[in-house]
Image 1: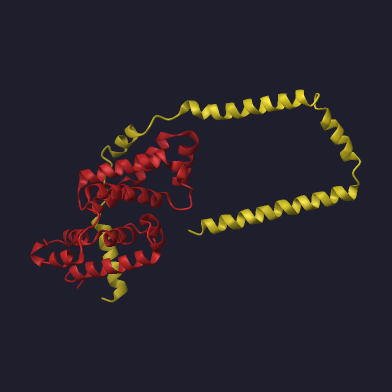
Image 2: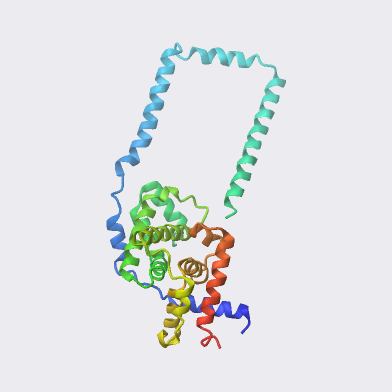
Length: 113
Length: 177
């Protein structure tokens, strides 16, 4: 028997030596030991997020004189030259693309295992 | 259609779905209990206690599973850590050293039957070689996966597998003819 055949033979025998172990209530015993599911927490998190967002929006609206600053800024935006808008859109697109490539590259290096 | 392990893990993460976790336990219980039975040298009660502990820990720490490895590999690592902690408590982690291993090579202690001989030979290996053999040769993990489970360098896993194999082959030489 050559070395590789010997290895294969040994691996096969090792795998055959351990038969499938029947569950026999093992899973049920594990499930009984698990902590109770946190049903309340499941709804609490989105509720807190929505509540905080609503509160922040209301405060901003009241403190900014009914959102008047938005109208002012919108008006300012209409006076910007078209070339600037195109340049800004191009730069934003390139920035997002660079971010995407960087994220993809770092994820690839993590997944190599 | 049967859900994949990843889909079941997602259900546990999102909905805290214990039925999904139960399905994961059902799928993995045999291999995890089998591994622990051999690490504990056939102590079935201890192996099952450790396996239960491993699954409960896995459930509690499932947010730490990032999906970069197979779920079973992650589970093996938890099971192995449970075994190591228990062994440390029992101060049995040192295993059997080379001299003891050689001393136990007395052929009269080896009963008939290849399976019995194999299990006996396996139980005589030092813990680091036994663990590497069980993970790589018996459970089909790659050397890299075994290195992550055992938390040791890749080269050490390869050496341990090689040495363990040589010892097993020496013990089972008559069967391999």
